[in-house]
Amino acid sequence: MGKPSAGLTPRRTGLSPCNSHMAPTHRLIAAAAIGIAAFLAPASAQIMLTVANSGFESAVSSGFPTAAGNWQGDANSAVTAQNGVTPYAGIQMLSFTNNGIPDGTNGTGSDTLQLVDLSAYASSIAAGNFTVTLSAYLNRSGSNYNEFWTRILSFNTTMANFETELISTANQGQASNYTSLLSDSNPATWEFSSVSLTLPTDTTYIAVEVSLLHPGDNVPSISPGYYADNITLTAVPEPSTYAALLGAAALGFAALRRRFFA
Image (cartoon, rainbow, N blue to C red; front, side, top):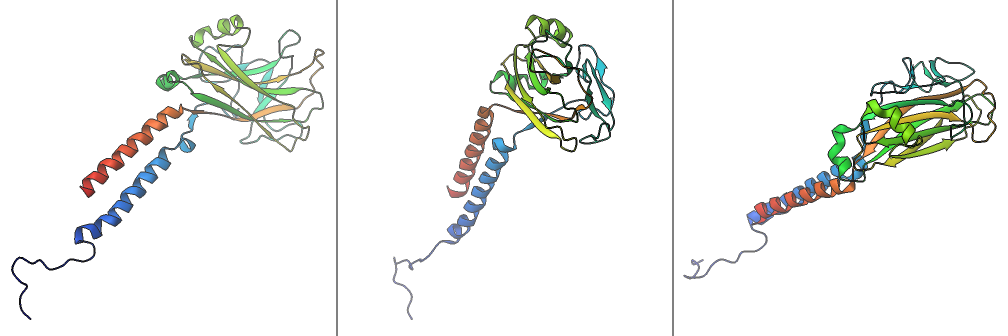
């Protein structure tokens, strides 16, 4: 056979060697971008905040707290198994030994509080939509009509002023939210309760609280056997944080694509 005529170029068919390698590279980059987006998605964004002595394995103190670090309150104690109730986890749990009504005008409630410093999250809180969630497991063997409260209160002052600030805001703090639970009287079942609060943008710390209250006007004598255990506190920053991160991932993908396909 003769040589091709001058000026003619042999016909090329199919993908060039370069293009044949680009397709799988494209898929790898796309998969990486999807993986980054999934990793940064809000579903995996929950922050575990520190709650000291979350299982009441050490003693709780009396009085109003003035610093972060442990539970304080009134009419409570850390106990081992009793009245047919065993701790949800560990060897101790919180026992409530008195009750009151929600407005605090009749009786002495069994209130247990802890202050949590949020200064490390100041920028996220200032951006708005910083939501914290308090969770607890609750149990009783008593038969009286009493209810548990789990509550979050936010403050924008200093922890040393907590008592003054609490009283001046009629026990509400800068902002607050609570959940009540009328549990069953089966000592074998621990019931889950949680409450969430989106914090004001100038919040510096929060108080988390578990309490035993009577919801009516007549406060009966408390019968033994009201308990809390396994307290957790989580936070989810504002969605705009994740929008920014996902946007950065998209820009990175576009830059990589231009590099490989230019």
